[in-house]
Image 1 (tube, rainbow, N blue to C red):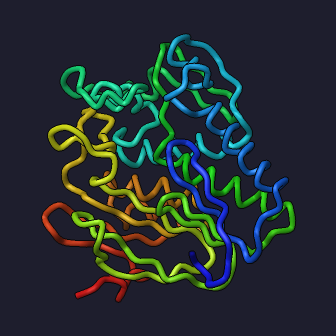
Image 2: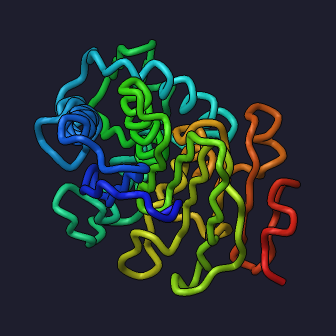
Length: 290
């Protein structure tokens, strides 16, 4: 709990655990509204349910009307696709399914790694309209959890609940001014921390190769150009003004170094590499234990 005496509203959504902390218990009507926002997001973006919008796109080419939030999600993905030379892509869903991270969570590879289709060959994303020329499996997991945190925060703010803190299984959004001390989980031992950072107003999101792992060294951060798991980076953290941006950049750091991303985005970062060294921006200076 970020602040002593606050209460938590906890629930499951989009495959992860959520905790919304507030100074006093949320009225039931606000709890229901938050759950409705989660349900709407899942109905659009989940590739694990056959009735979602992206599941329909995986079966039938054509144009699909997406929720309003897609207007911000598309340009972000397109920029990161370009900066990573195609390695970070919303078309990675088929590659994940190939390696066993599929609708039934089989966790059994169906063959060798499968590169994702090229964006420019199959996809047009114009605001809230998604047009695909061939069946593709869209997966926006690299930024979706963060965007949903932003949407939940917006609902609370619209209801006049300005003081709140959202924890989406370690991806954090703090809309207030009171800073929260956050431990940075060790990439090889979840019971330990490699440092502590103070999170003020904004979001802190992480991505790690030790999360959602299965099989022989398989994990969920795949290179779209090869379809294989990234081996050079083991963990990353990004702090930004919105959770959607922080979430997306935490994944992007597996493919693009922080200084290059910083030429386009206003954020701070920490990246831990598989050879043991770390790179970080000035805001993370002193956050790591020696």
